[in-house]
Image (cartoon, rainbow over all chains, first blue to last red):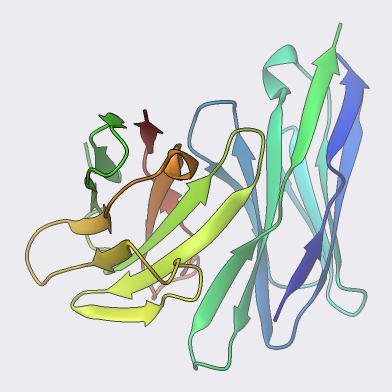
Length: 113
Length: 116
């Protein structure tokens, strides 16, 4: 099975930088996704990492270390609209022979003025 | 709109009734996933389907819940004899299995089920 851990809640100040960590334990690892979910809405895709290193996309960056089973999502120049839950999801080849994506429970980020 | 479509967006059922939730995947996607989300909680995987085939139903309750994805038409999540505990948001997602970002899941807007 898979085990995905991320903090339950975080608070950060508008204009600041925040890092949301995700650790995972799985066999057959084949990629990690980050999704954003505003309250009452569907999750939307933010990033995908399969190789070690940093992927940058505007104010958002995502980092992966496969050897450490660790990823983080970095949000810069925080805006009030960034208040949302951030979901870490791991893709892995499971015993059934197919790629399964498993979601963490999400980190609820509150941005304060 | 080429995105994932779900209907109805809101569904109210009395205890004991049946709920049918529909999901049409994105054009070109042949894989569908259903998730349940309780208020203030994470996404809980329920079932993963291809056309006419259930790949993984390890997250489905053993009783009252069933899912299908027929050759033609939308995927259906069916909940029989609903109870108050079934009240939740049910999200459908779809994916392709080829391409650079294969298995990236695109989510529909969800169906909010309320059992009274």
